[in-house]
Amino acid sequence: MPTKVVTKWVEGMTFDTEVNGHHFFMDADPEWGGLNKGPRPKPLLLSALSGCSGMDVVSILDKMKINGYQFRMEVEADSTDEHPVIYKDIKLKFFFEGENLPQDKVMKAVRLSTEQYCGVNAMLKKSSDVTAIVYINGEEVKQ
Image 1 (cartoon, rainbow, N blue to C red):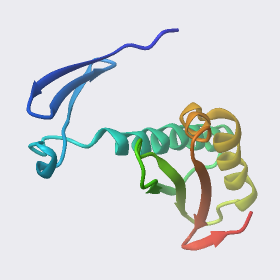
Image 2 (cartoon, helix red, strand yellow):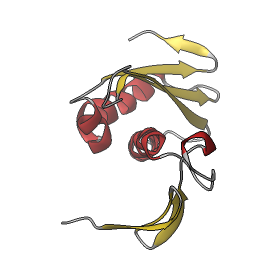
Image 3 (cartoon, helix red, strand yellow):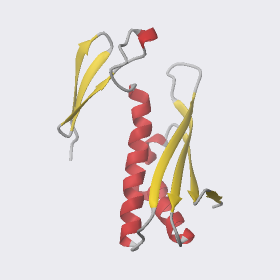
């Protein structure tokens, strides 16, 4: 099924983008002629990555009947120095909090997302080193 995104120039470096009927602005830093009316385009890729993988993980854990936990993600990325400037190293951090969280099931859900289901991860892996790091109740889980 084709995907269509419409992006219209507003002024300066500000663009209005419509995705699935939702509008948001993208803009540049003032030092690059922007007005800071919205996020920069490249970090939106990181947001898409965390959203894609996060939705997978929640769905998989729900199917495993795992509930009663809090979950958040952080994405950190290092860029190349030369143009085109791209993300070379991406750390996708999963933070789970809750009592009696089954480590094996949490890890399986993350692994299924990052290795099989998340299309954003699959696309970014073609140009970047994407690493998943899992924390349960503040402790990093070694894979």
